[in-house]
Image (spheres, rainbow, N blue to C red):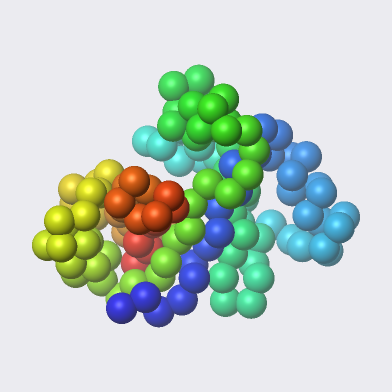
Length: 132
Ligand code: CO
């Protein structure tokens, strides 16, 4: 059901600084950068093989990522698993009584379809189901 790690998302306070750090340290390039207005975030995607490191920063104070940074500081925010069908994977999670953040699939960045599973139900890890 999970076909690939789509991305590992890291919450940062200063996106440009984090992009520069990865470029200087690991010679990475930004493959995609996007503001996702609905989530109140800006992201930069660095390709690693068939997956991405996603550097994530809030664009406004009431963004969930802003609250996350306030509470926990910078660091690992979520893991995005690639799936063939976000709807199917989400239904399966819900059918087993697990808690979800998105009740239905919704648009993500890069034209993907996504849904989040609550970390309280998944061993403390926020999970994003990503359909390309
Ligand atoms: Co994500």
